[in-house]
Image 1 (cartoon, rainbow, N blue to C red):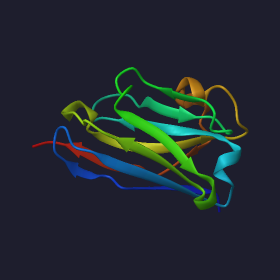
Image 2 (tube, helix red, strand yellow; image 1 turned 120 degrees about the vertical axis):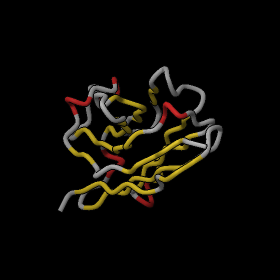
Image 3 (cartoon, rainbow, N blue to C red; image 1 turned 180 degrees about the vertical axis):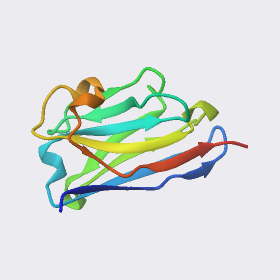
Image 4 (cartoon, rainbow, N blue to C red; image 1 turned 60 degrees about the horizontal axis):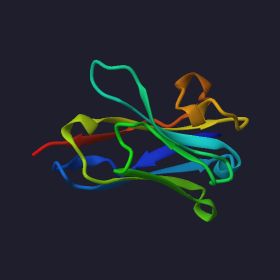
Length: 127
């Protein structure tokens, strides 16, 4: 069974940090373009960050540039999102995603190109 499983969400204070993990099973994650999206209550799902299959190219939404870092560990078949300097407006359910076969759609943070979604993990930024 092909699936993506996120972990690492929770409640964090403004200015704090959290690291999300996304582990793939049933397929090799590093072969594909992959990334993170988020959806806040009452809002559409939006792209946060993406990383190419080679790992050489990354992309970030303007709202998270300089604060979030996407990375991967091929040996663990896992992708990460390190989130620093968190703001209340970062509160959302975060989803990991993969585009199979690898392409440019997810790299452009377009959700319509995503074939695989994780179940989501809640991140709440509040004092």
